[in-house]
Image (cartoon, rainbow, N blue to C red; front, top):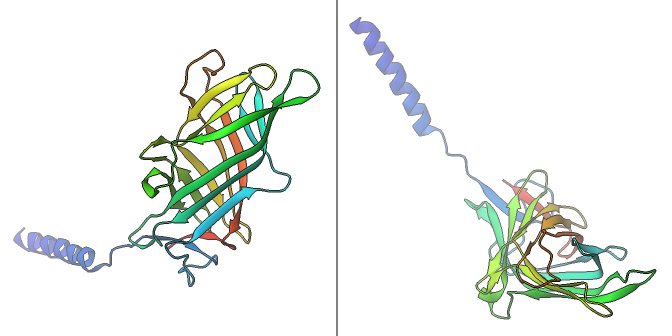
Length: 225
């Protein structure tokens, strides 16, 4: 019995030694100009990332009252780290986002203009929304926008050119799909929360649908190492 106990202890000790000697698995996430692991050309801290709808693209804000369509939707952000060993994300600050040429059906055969303006964003870095690129597989991943010190990401929609149809502020963090490529894309179907009161503020959560092209830098991939 003593011999078996000694052998068992020896086996356990050897297994423990293997566990101690085995190298820990490291994690690293970077934005890269190539779909290669490890990345030979990581995107450095301070890189400006510009996104926009395609020429024929449309941003849609679908509410229970009406569907708002915008022919222009752009954003600019700057990376705040380069990712790398031990980091699961690449952080960014979204400094601007614009919605232009927004319309809503007028109840007949035409449309009327709407205003879509961002909220809880300012000029100072801490007043800009925080963006996060999270690792995925084969060059892809997730891009999310959360908040600034002024509050949660969001926008105010006002459609009242002829008759007031929508007048409401919507906020919510986003979690969108990043697809790397020669022209990378960020697309989402985001639920937004109505925050302001009034008869023309929907009670149900509208859906914001978009697909941005990454104009700069290009090509662009998310690489998990």
